[in-house]
Amino acid sequence: MVRLDLGDVSLRRMQEKDIDAVKALIKEGCEGTENRLILYLLTRPLALLMLAILSSILRCVLHSFILALVIPVFIFIIFLKLTIPRSVGILGSSRPYWDYVGSSYHADTEPDLPNPHAGKAKLEKTRRRKKPKEKEKDKTSEREQVDEDELKQRSKVAGEVWVADSDGEIIGCVARDGWSRDGVCRICRLVVQSWYRREGLGRLLVQGLESRTKQSGIRRVYAHVPFPSKVGEAFFRRLGYRLQGETAGTMGEEEEEDDYEEPEKGWLGFPLTKTYTHIHLRGSSLGSGDFPGRRVHERVKSSDWRQTNTQDANFKVTRKQPKTAADSSKLTSVIVLMTQRKFIFHYKNVRWARGRNETHLCFVVKRRTGPDSLSFDFGHLRNRSGCHVELLFLRHLGALCPGLWGSNVDGARMCYAVTWFCSWSPCSKCAQQLAHFLSQTPNLRLRIFVSRLYFCDEEDSVEREGLRHLKRAGVQISVMTYKDYFYCWQTFVARKEKSFKAWDGLHQNSVRLVRKLNRILQPCDTEDLRDGFALLGL
DNA sequence: ATTTTCAAT
Ligand SMILES: [Zn+2]
Image 1 (cartoon, rainbow, N blue to C red):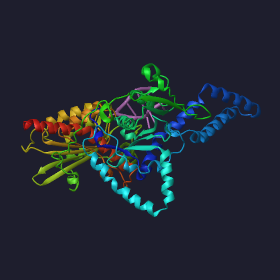
Image 2: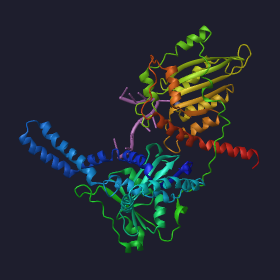
Image 3: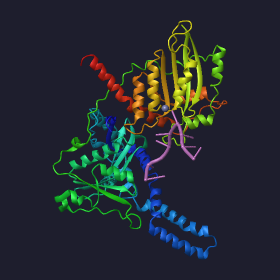
Image 4: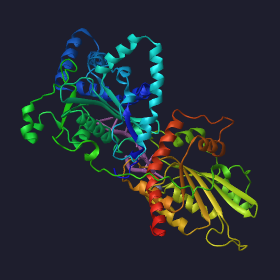
């Protein structure tokens, strides 16, 4: 949680234009909670007993045992499906429906939440948002005044939604429920977009909102956590929240307050959320001061000196057949095209890549055969018998690149440029070996495109470090985008005149992966810069 | 109850 690029994130009120994005986010956050809840309710002893009784009663009427067993369960599930969304606010909010329009009313007038990770960029952002407000004003004046009044009323009870905005993409949200009592507020609907989880964004949102509420005199914050949600509970515990009733011992004299937040009535009177409490200490410093792990984050523009070789320089040159018989024999064993299904399955850049238990590597080896003649080798490989595909490729490379170590038969030193497209990014071990290999072959340039990042979810994973290691070794690592998939489809797939068709979310996932990779590699840039400064004696 | 990842059966 140290080297995050949270500095880029601005925490602001949801506005009307964000409503769709926030709804999508909430939907994502809700996914599964309802089913989990149903499963939970179904497996309560009381429910099981009732079901058993119902089944045995039905058994008297019905002939089929299975049917008698299944029907009550089925009915119960249907009943739950129908009643739960209506009786319970989702994700811990007090009402089933959220008034999005009401809660975005005049939201742009409110300043952003403090982001301790951000440097300066915030000021302009708050200013920039004045414009849409003006427009809105015009529009509303055209409409009837009644509308405006009604909205104002609605906004009073609607609550507030705060969103985390990273370069225009809404990647997280948290809401302050419209319900309130003096000195108490309630937060709910905390969702972080699944690509950005485990990066400290949830903490940022909650603590940002806390500090804001603290300024407005709130001394106690309740978090209603959907139940049962282990992650949510652990999360709020880490932020210093305690389950209702646990606070008594720790807070001592605070008890005069004697405030007790009723758990929601929930479904048929059963509480469906757990209530967590956080009490602001009196006289504690305001606002951003008390973020744990606070760090001033310098933004460093990544220098382009390494990326002088541009994308398609290689690809525009026409494809040449290998000259020698030996080469072609090697190639024919390799250049068997991938099937369409295989390519799509293994290269699909979905978030949860279940079942991709192998890794494919499509490569292009470019060699300079003369002052102005180039030749290319194409092929694809997959991992075999426990050997990672990258290492297999390295073994392969000796045959593809004669004179890689030292000089050729003619005495000419050969130069090679390798580009590969891999379905997974390299693991840390392969990264190390690759870096070592490259340190011994200075006439080889490597460019890696990956479709997905391998084990890079944990902040301190060795795979992340491995990628940085590779970058420091001079490898250009990028995430595959549409044009890369397109190129691979044209080059490595038995496409039978079928043109490449992008899957759902290709672009968006690619964008997210690019940003994720940038976040992973960014420390390299700062180190480079630091080295540069050190070299200059600064 | 969150999910996966160069498998292991
Ligand atoms: Zn590996």
